[in-house]
Length: 463
Image (tube, rainbow, N blue to C red; front, side, top):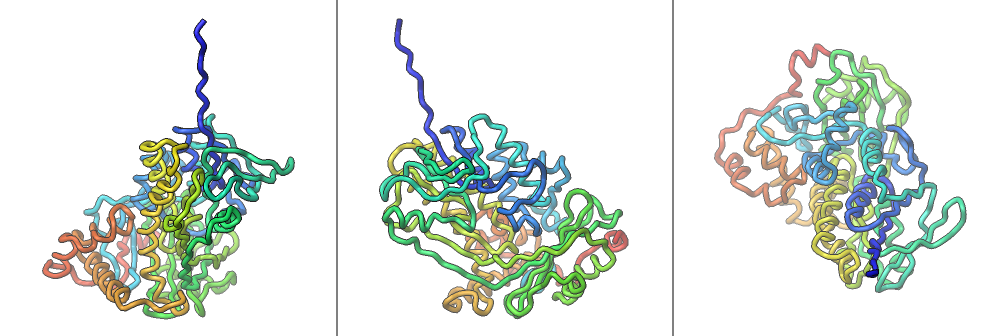
């Protein structure tokens, strides 16, 4: 009888079961059997957990992220909408004041649709979809203590589950453990030089309270966003995010010297003293649900793994473990999904176990990271004490141009389309220098500036 050959699939380990790890695991099942390691116990429903404290605050998924979600897991967006999320038209379903204090008109001429829900609902839908794949094994309540291997190749991880320490081997280890990633120390333990890091910290603090939405607003009320102005310190802003179950997530923010607090008696007063009092006015008579949650871990922090001269085979870092951003810009989830797409593109063109694949992954995922980083740092670097060095002349010039682009987009639908292409991470920043922006900026007819938030009379009466 002829001999039969059993093909052994490669193996992969993903560290972290938040959005970055779940998307990475779903991609890797095309190429390997996957073990997903998570230090927390994952909840069964749309509930919070210790490892994702930022889930309590308002989250947006920009249209670039919606596209990436659907490319990775078709139907995921529809699933979230079926459970109470919303696809909203930006800016048509949004009342927004830009950092330069210009109110956007609610044009509906662009294709951009953002996904709005609580982070807990989004994570729950994503977990259900990914973890039902039989090619993924979950180890929760398990801590990764370090990498196995050497400076040229990572061969697995050392773990500490409840049953005792042991080693897991794998052909590829992916670190998707978020801002608290230990990858810099793990790599130096293997004999590699320290990774270059940069931190830009505007000193932003967040305070969030959930409210019962007025009955007449459920399912139709716009997002309301008052962005902080870096030219004024402290910078203060806020957002009302209408989400599932007839609730408003209200997140307020402030930089050093102007931070919101946990004091329930001060929450509405803080909202009323923003650059425009619209948020405070809308929540003044609303019923609060629960206590106020605060967060101060909001610095922009980036690790330049793609620039390291040596990189081990068998190891890659994704998502917030590469770079975390000030949450006010709402880019973290979009970058996470785009990193997973970059991972898939590399693996479809190069074998998972091929020498050099891990370096190609690291270089590829740096591209979506860089786009979001430039947008966030371009604003936050102007707050006092945000970085080691003040903004350079070219950065100041670019910031002035961005202010003018925002003002043009607020009054011209053609320019708004170009602006949203960049803000949604669908296209690179060079789009801001296209004719769609330059012609309206220099020659086009622009509608007059709005003098206040563009709420309709029906929306005002519904509150």
